[in-house]
Image 1 (cartoon, helix red, strand yellow):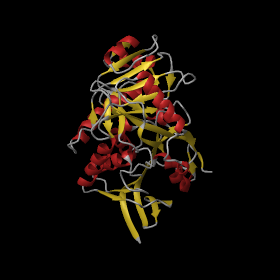
Image 2 (cartoon, one colour):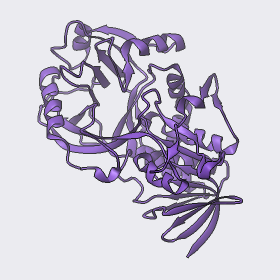
Image 3 (cartoon, one colour):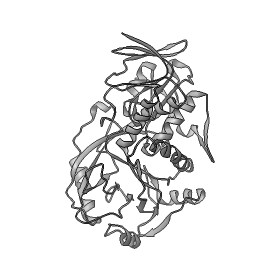
Image 4 (cartoon, one colour):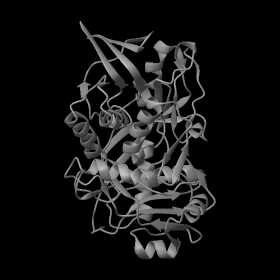
Length: 398
């Protein structure tokens, strides 16, 4: 049986876990990543091919985090010839007074004004003139922010994996689930079917599976696990000017939708459009169905038919993904020190929950900096990120 020691053990080999391993390797930490499935899998929050990158947020500190992340994206880009973020802009439009899980138009504009992030305000008529949308309510408003774009998620994971492995400091163990953990005088001992590993530090980056990993520590946290559907729609006309987009609508009259332009890494000739609400809310990832909700797909197709030009409204390449979100809607992300075994532990950090694709490379750095020394805030250039905004309300495991 294996018996090895590391400077850091990372539980979870998804995008954030791999980013954490890469960040630790840059500090010369001997690091082990334990993944219960294979890396680059579609079984959790890393499912799918694309994510939206944007600077606009209703919260100033989240917009600052997006701004600060650009340096880390540029560094990660150096590990691949694939383009990690295609900068084709971000369009938000709809009811300017409506808020959602993504924030709100008016609140985001206020933050962009404060941080001097440039954007162009648009009326419904101007949106229809510039972009392939139609039949929008006349009172809809919005803005276009040119720095937004689309993230190649799998290329990002591959780049983080390659960067970690190239360091010579990282071991990746696939298909090796964690079965137990124990406190030791020098850190944490993690048990798997293959043996045990001793880590001076521990990062739990298990996404929707986080409470399974916290159970041996006697802990749990409040998350809702959204199972969400998406589909691709065939282009019937060129749509090179289509940005990433999000529409804010009253859910009682329709639903919230978002979308992506055509990309060469996922179904060329098609654009992705998805509903921004759950098919169902799960309490455990094992409840997931890989079959999308027929009702969600119907709403998706109807919105495409009613409001988009140049797309065949027949959903293709349909899929689901799991997104863990904090039950406390004021928490955009959950990132905190883990009070394992009834006492504070500055050498154990848990990350989960949130629309975190845009933060993949900087979140790994945040986790490693927290594990390097106790922190209450992290400074990146002109931006200071308060960690209490991401604090977890810990409860005892059920």
